[in-house]
Image 1 (cartoon, rainbow, N blue to C red):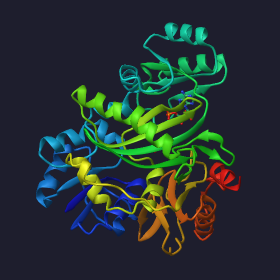
Image 2 (cartoon, rainbow, N blue to C red):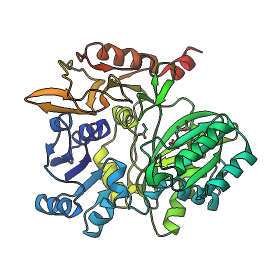
Image 3 (tube, rainbow, N blue to C red):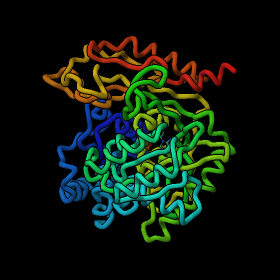
Length: 423
Ligand code: AMP
Ligand code: GLY
């Protein structure tokens, strides 16, 4: 099978690495890709915003499956264009990608299908939103409706913070994403991420993970795209997984199909495990980054077979098996991230890795034959172990062998799970 992978981050490097292990793979192309992905795929010089160019590329190379990594091309309708041309595509239509692209859309679906989530209201009027917040009191959560690069959510512990967040949204701090605001009840519990494939009618549970969004040790400092992750998430017991499938995922698949927009791709469900059980915080319609990296380290099955089954409505014929080992990834970022940072800093050396270790490239490029950092999050240094503690020790031993002056990382990825393991 010939596959085209869309994207250029650590998530796509992990997907490329795993796809490349498939005995069914005959060619792997990636656009735009990165130097890590180039170890497993032929990089295609292709403008992924030009959907017709992607179609032409697929025709010329007889591509059998397109795997779309990031959300932006999905929201832009790339999967619709490809499927309309008869090209099997892993990733939802633009209409189904609203599960990530519009928080209000998802909340309305939850309400129609009784999916457990925080009580909410949608607002397009500043005064009405403020009146509601005043009536509800803090803590309360204010969200810009649309995609705001992970920055549109304020978990307000005081009324003043909530009111300021509403002002920010309507003042255009998040651009058009903030033209509508969702105000939702604060959920108290432990967060976990759950991943599940869907072909539009069948669900196939993948695995669980937990990430660390704050930039600093001890979960302090500003939010980021994720400074590290591990899998599995201990809070997701088999009972919680089966409740999540039944109470959240299955009604979502049914709801999307009944609305005429069946969901093809991966659900990345952000959950809060509250005293009542799993509640949905949000959906993403793509693999998490860096959560995907730890999932791929633990996946024993053929990824190509799974993604192809999801893209061709044959998910009921496959199953996924997972290593019992834990996997943990540490994000190495450019000093300054998530604020301003220098671009193009030299990565002097990446250590060789053994089995159970892998360094994924998230934001790198080759400049005059030398590896440089191009993004905020640059490397995902990953290891497996029998426990999260062992995986953590392996990942940091590898981090310590990376020679990159301008990089930094958190030193405590996995701390909650390790604290649990000690008890
Ligand atoms: P989101 O962008 O929706 O994932 O929100 C970012 C983060 O805000 C989540 O990972 C949670 O930590 C937090 N959050 C979002 N919604 C709620 C909620 N209803 N209650 C408590 N925390 C929340
Ligand atoms: N790590 C969180 C995300 O991919 O959105």
